[in-house]
Image (spheres, rainbow, N blue to C red):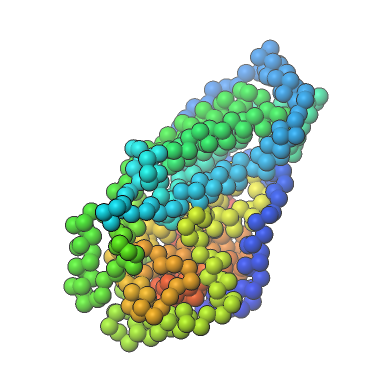
Length: 514
């Protein structure tokens, strides 16, 4: 299912001028989640790693007429007796949606850790160590591939956990506490969704475990967020304590399965040794090409040279190499390469105010939640408007972030297979307004991420397809405007990203949610 890149240009001419303004509204205040549909059949949707929704058992709940349940109702009343302004704030905050808020927390952690370490006195560079995460440089360095992987594990695990939760909700059909006792205050939107196990607690359990794995130095912060989220559910009248305990236990169990996958997905070996590094350089020279050289001083090893070998979600490594990997870039000695290099020089020499604005808008560099996080933010604002249930939120975020992680693997595979030099390496006159990333040029990461994200989002929210495609094109062009990538990097990156997104669509069409 290939899409014509020319369509992007047509879309751009229609909607490009408006999409950037739409994205800059970061002050959007999310209202209480009130789904248009509860998706009561979600327990039958196809999970990602689970063998089925009953792989991890959830015990039957106590009866709503039992003394223990009545005591739990009274606990809510005690908490609600004198609500403080701060307690009302956290109820409102978490009431916007569990999947939404934990995705935001992930983005916050990515931005915090997206800072490359300074060099040692001897000119070498230290590497973050997961075994000693608090030592300098703190673990992790949340660069774009790491971030894409982090978003994927959180989203995929949350989806599987909520599919299981929905199955048990229907099986046990225990009503929400405010259905049992009409005298309770209710500070969230009421619904007919069974409350056992609590969907919010499922998200707490899975999110806290995944985030502790990925950001081991932030466990106190993660635990504080989890405790606040639990308290919000009691304060709001949405769940009794046994709803929460069952949900969190289920979430933790399912998180364990994803943690096991993460420990064996080869991401830990993505930093190459000098032998592999030298071989990549020699391979490029043997092909008659100019190899990429770090433009930092002292020279810094390239970012995650072996990330292209990390295990993907939507296709296998053979498919990536034979079907998705971009074709060879123009030879560095070819007329096409020289033409593309001159084009980038002209962009760097005479950038317009609009080109500079676009470059900075999509830069997503150090201290940000990275290009994959940017697309998570775009999706979040649009998903809020669609009034999805928590389980559909998780499903759609899972599709988006599996595509973004696979786009990262695909792109990094091409970068280090071809080892192509950056424009500023080939022409010292070229100066970037957004810095020069420390890894090979071909293909463009922004373009690959954006092609994948726009493709799956266009499937999820079809009326916005033109807008998403225009955004992807703008993000891709921003790397040319910033004098960071050649045209081939961007065009072939977009094409590869679209192919990745098509695999996400294949999964979407067969997961039972459509």
